Length: 161
Image (cartoon, rainbow, N blue to C red; front, side, top):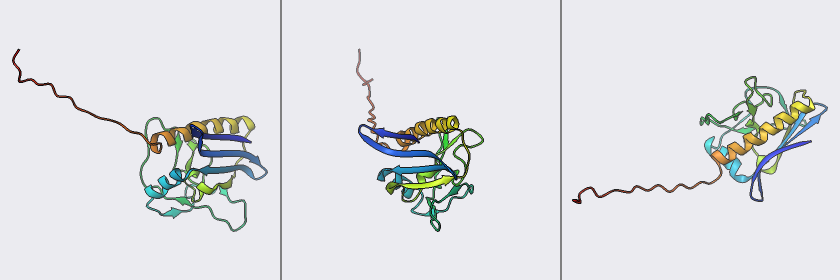
């Protein structure tokens, strides 16, 4: 079992657990309410099934995976992950970590699924490390509260010297 996640001082905000399973790689994810609310808000409250692949399988017959829609483009030069490759492998052909499962509806209560793939221990460990960094980047860049003070100073140019 390999854990990857990010937390603030004493708070776990995104927990990801990867575990080799007889059917592939078992992925468990749990997020704090502010993470799920972010996706619900920016997806307009709409949900959708995984749409970019068929590699995600539920563990229970009849269960369905749904994700918060995400129409808002989220991209910056430091992103080493994708939030859009729902249903596909844990790493893209371009080397991006697939973090789109944090959009799962109900992730605040914990969700799990099987990613239909075979991975060596070393590969699973590399992906877990990349996922931890990706989850931390996502949370700190897009959700963690920030505050900037901006001020303008004006020099009085009307005085005579």
